[in-house]
Length: 323
Image (cartoon, rainbow, N blue to C red; front, top):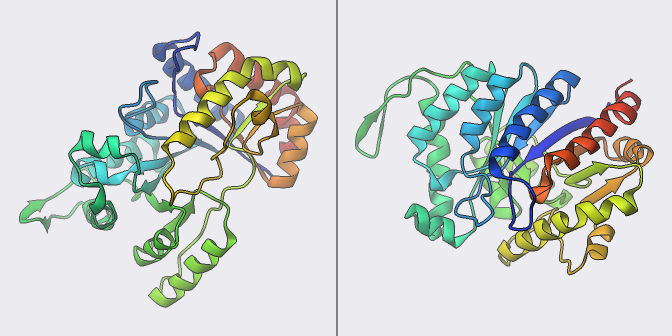
């Protein structure tokens, strides 16, 4: 049975016909829809200080989604851990875990935009060290017991129902080794089997037998339409904006499944990361990849356009991939 996820970052570029208030309201409605239909997971992202209002408080939104749903798992991919106070972050995540009845997981990311580190007054050169330290602090905090950290006594209450599952993000050998060293799952940004093998070997060295890798596969944006060529005229500007701004952020050491170098909408149509598909093509994708990732408000798409794709998915795709 194919896994089906729904993803949000809630950007609103200058040319969009919607507002942030409308996007956030639609996000909650779409999460309720996904929960009612038994979709598997809702994925949220984090960035700061972006002109288009890229979601900056995913833990807050995760709490709202938890309150609006009953079953769907909630994953924050990724929380840019070095930008946060780990004790406050542990408290916030513990509350979301309680509100969601243990449905929360997170990918701990390093972050890579210099502007975000400057905004948070954090030295970007220390981000690896801080990530290691902060993940350990959060895990201690979730025990509910007092402990010493940086010369002070810390205690986080209430403790979560279940300590949130932590995966380590990244697309480098260093990230793979860090995940094993921290006895965490590994969530690389690119489907690189060699990275997975390196992680598994490092887990063996570390004596960690609970490791797992979640390699990305298939497009990160799927939108269903009766006539994809015509639909690309509506979706294309949003996809091109999304791809170009994301590509502009990438540093030389970054590798991502969603990195697309595109100048035109035609370039986007050829991409493997962004797909507008007929219902039958979407069924075929689900069969081949074992997953479908819906991103109904991608790049500031209006809720109306997003809902059209979701309703068609509900009517003509979901029954065929879920029986």
